[in-house]
Length: 493
Ligand code: BG6
Image (cartoon, rainbow, N blue to C red; front, side, top):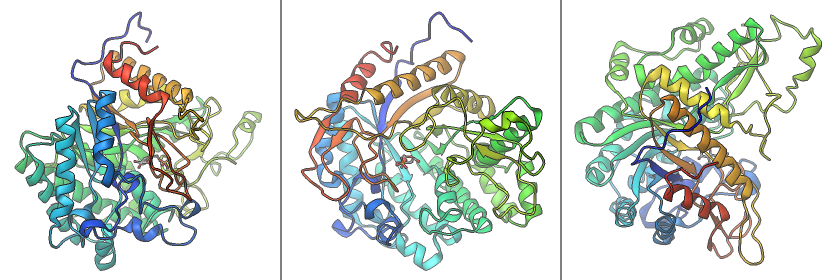
């Protein structure tokens, strides 16, 4: 579709930025906070980049007022942050830690006083270690009860102050990295266990949503899903079919449960044949169907490209030579691909992931695909017809602080500008987008890439080995986004 003029962003569009507790707060054992699985995991030799951890992170716990002051300066309309479960309930299920709860209430009050709408994420990957030790974390249904108790404490305390709530952050990513690739805690490599844990997360998500609707009838809640559209490598119908499989396997698998309360049939049948399907009781189905999100949070970084598996279609034509799998990351969280050598054997894989020959990549090998953002928005709107809140999108890069304390991140500005333009086109197409939170507000700890992979509008003076001054320094992109917000996106080019 070609438009001579794009429609404007809605008047109350939530121009925002995001973060997550473990990645920014620090104060890992302050004021009664219990350890989370990330506090423990990051201490295991070789698990994180140059042994980085979130013990201090960017010290947001002590500097939140300064951070909010920068948000005000920027004119930010919304700020998405997550709550550390073990700060609020140190052992995950017992006594509430008043100091922990008070920290988040103070943060929310500070945001509101500065005209910033809080968007609160309940779970951004930091399960209390006590629940991991006692029950095996998401592998036990007992954790659902604990999660509900934790959510209830926050709903009751903050229901009159927080309008937008996110349940799970990127369930697809934390379950696959945690239970399939062993790159995140609890470092398991077992597909059956992954699907079982994933089902329990689905139930916890659904129960939290239903409870929220009972307790906070005027608020809005939804999960944040890490969505990447799947493309066929060629117009060969067998590649197109592979892409259908990829879309169902990667995306429908989670989003259908969130939005329809049912698992997609084709994928469930495959998993049943392989003996790795989750056990879904009639009561589970009732719980999943009863919960209806008010919006879908979408984190968009990139999609994936697939072709028919090489068992049914061995390398044969010269056009195959353009396709190199050598740089394709098997642990790419956005493309969960059942390859021959993995547990799907001896079954025929539904697709093979492949590099997209048309797309540039970031320094960390993530494809840069703004048009894919529009494709994503269109597909999600057509399939689920819910308002969409972009809860993450951004560019991880190496930033350089100049001697006069500036960061000229024109590459980030270009990246965000292109993505916002595609979002504007999607809105003109008819997609209902209620807000956009760039990842991230300040620089922060990348789970596996330390402090050098920077995403923020605000530079933080620290690196992997030295906490330095932790000074906050707005980058060029800060002032650019400030203008975008002021103009409600009319200045995007
Ligand atoms: C998302 C997560 O997957 O991607 C964030 O929700 C994360 O927490 C972001 O930081 C970027 O990932 P990375 O690996 O580049 O830090």
